[in-house]
Image 1 (tube, rainbow, N blue to C red):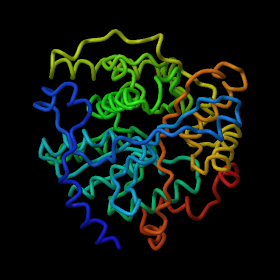
Image 2: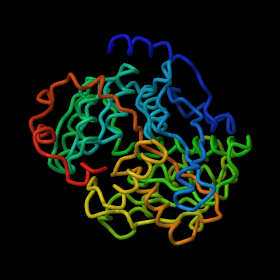
Image 3: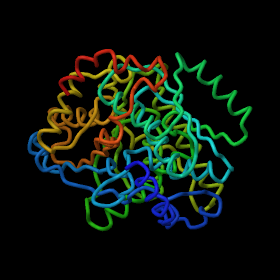
Image 4: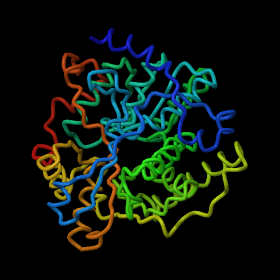
Length: 387
C-alpha cells in the first residue's frame, strides 16, 4: 500500500498548475519558485444546518481540509492550510539545492506532519524537531504518521536547545533547509496570498458573495498575514477575524507578527514585480479574537469541545481543539451576541480531518524517541475524551 501510494505521486507532481497569484502577476514566476501539489481551488460550501443552529442564514466554509492532492477515488493526501505554504517553501528549497528539510513543531504538529508528507513525496529527507504539548488522540495520530513518512523525529525540551541543534545541522550540511514553525516566513505567506486570489476568483464566479467576515485560526500568523495582503491586492474588503490559538508570551505578539509577515511578504512581491503595490497595513480589516486562547497551547477548552461536538453532529465534519474548533467557537459566540446575524460569514477551515490511521496503526510507537512514548502510555487530556 505504502509503495503504491508513493509511486503514484511521482506522476501527479509533474502536473503544472499555475497559481492564481502568477496569473495576476505573471512576472513573479521569473523569481519565485512554485511546485503544484495542492488540490485547488478548495470548495466553498454553505453550512445550512450549522447556520440554522446558531440563527445565522449565511454561514459558509472554505474547505482547506481538502487541500491535499486528490490521488483518485476521492482519496486526498494530508491537507489543511500547511500544504499551501509548502508549495512555495519546498520549491524554494529545491531551487537552493536542498536535500534535507528541517522543521519545528510541537509533538502533534500538523505543520510538521504536512512537511514530512510532501518532503517524502518530493524526494527530500526530513527532520522534525518536536517539543512537548498536552496529550490528545490527534497527537498520537500525527506522530505515527510522521513515522510512516520516514521522517527523522527528534525531541527537544525547549526552543533554545532546539535552535542550537538546528544551527549545528545547517552549519555542517549545506544541503539542509530550515522551515520555521508553521512555515511562517515570507515565502510561506505566499501560499495564502495565492489563496486570497483563489477566493477572489470564487467570488467572481458566484460561489459566494464577498464575505463580511472571514474567521480563521491564528497561531504563527502566516495564514492571516497572507490573506490580508492578498485581499488588499485583489480588492477584497472582507474583515478577517483571526482567532488566536494560544496565550501571548509578549504584549500584542499576534498583531506584531502579522504586521511583520505582511510587510516582509509585500516587500518580497514588490521587489519581484513592481506592479505589485506596497500597501499600508489594513488595521481596520483585522479583528483579533483572543477569547479562546486558553491557558496553554494544545490544551482543550470547554467552548472548543462544544464546537467540535456541534460541528460533528450537525455538519459531520471533524475539527480539533487546538486550532480549527476555535473559529467555530468564536462564530457561535458572536452569533449569540447578535453581531453576525445578517452578515455573510466564511469559516476558513485549516484542519485536515481525514483519518489516516489505516496507514499508521501498524507502526510501533516505540520506534519514536523515548521522550515521545508517554503520549501512548499516558492518558489523553480529559476534554479530548469527550470531543
